[in-house]
Length: 148
Image 1 (spheres, one colour):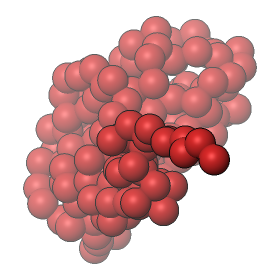
Image 2: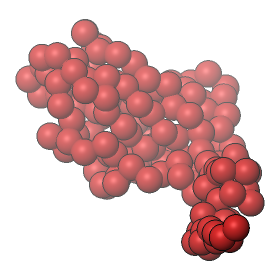
Image 3: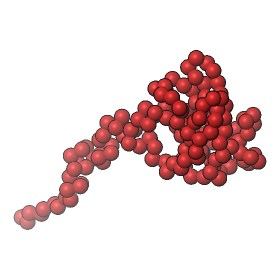
């Protein structure tokens, strides 16, 4: 009887040893999130004013397009550990035909990720509008030009 040998590359063995999972799948979820929560090819939009605050904004997922999801990252001028409510929408200040997204706090970067759909059609003069609601209840609204 002939013996046959099975040659398995080292990468396949390490995947098999991990129960068929890749290295990324075997990392703890918190480590995956910390590494991946800002892999959106973000571009800086600059700063804008809301109330008396200067806020930094970046846009991910490419250019804003009618009917497509947009991604905004907001960096507040203070550290709040996620206690502030940050909302954003694309369109006009009055929110007509806009979908409002609520920010998810990313502790690894001390900023807020917001995903929302752009209206279709996009109104003339479309901007990112951001509402900041501080823990004590005060609200401020500001806007910044999106990448189109």
